[in-house]
Length: 220
Length: 113
Image (cartoon, rainbow over all chains, first blue to last red; front, top):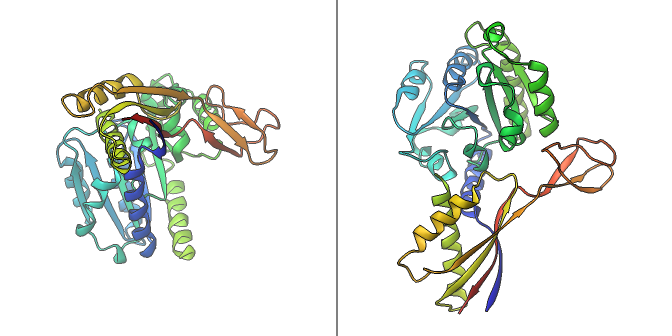
């Protein structure tokens, strides 16, 4: 006999992500899922942003990598609570993995939690972990043809940070093309051009983040 | 590759449904894969075969349909196929587009005995 089922195959993860979301809401916490290819600058961005924001925001970080705690060690030097998840092979973080870190944090004493996902332009876009929104980084050394090659990542993100703009004179990368192509896929994408190396553009990103945290607290 | 964990999720749902109907044999399962989901059908098929091998679900057919991306315009309410991942209304040019099909991964139907 045929049985009509009509269920979301990812419902198990979506359920956990929603439970995570509910807990974050109870604590008025803004949560960002930070994604990019390996080496685009996620951890360096976090180091710079923590330096700039820790005076006025209480920040916590969840680091996701296949192996190694190098990233968590870098963040720990900044004096903010951080937990390293090692997936042991999984190509993305899911709601369950993120939930397993909660015992290490005091969410009541936090304004902003950033989940630095595994370096991967494909899979993290598919899996919610309970975040308010996704932020992606694309560095100018990766080429300006990425939006049409990785549409889900661009569609799912609220923010695109174009990083390493100090290298623009040395690479074939068109800012116009990347902005045009990514806005076609996601017309509501907020785009920042930054260099974590020189600091260019970071102030706008930090001010934007402060506004989002404030809006989150007021929305509570 | 995460198709393995997705295949696992799929089989858990199938086993739940089979238990509801006291079914013991799975003949086939039909799923819809959204065009924009980060799932590779061949990889999923392979993982499904690997996980069901030497279990009571062995031999079941996995039927997969790819669902094209479809959007609905919030302004003029028209529904249209989204071509080349351009989320712009083909009728009025609005960018306020809601994806109504093509981004999810769902199980449609199972055939059992």
